[in-house]
Image (tube, rainbow, N blue to C red):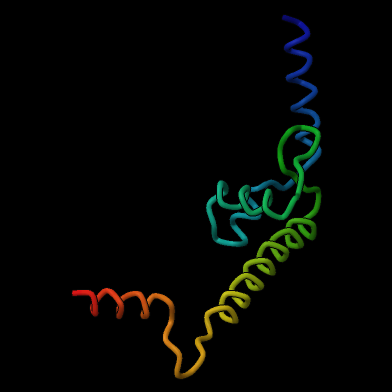
Length: 104
């Protein structure tokens, strides 16, 4: 019983080292904390020793928020490049619809 209490205190003391957490990043990005945690995992950012995300300075929090936004911007840009249709050619979906209409 004493060991369990000791471990809880160790985890709490480790987590108290960090002044900012996921909620602060979520506030900057205007997102839910769960969404921010998903984005952090996607970026490969690992949890700290207290098994939670945390940062000591506001600059670190802003850097994380910027990295999440950069990834979002890059993803949108790549989607726009992928979607550009070639003039005069029909998309595969349009071809399949046309073939379905011909069959009827």
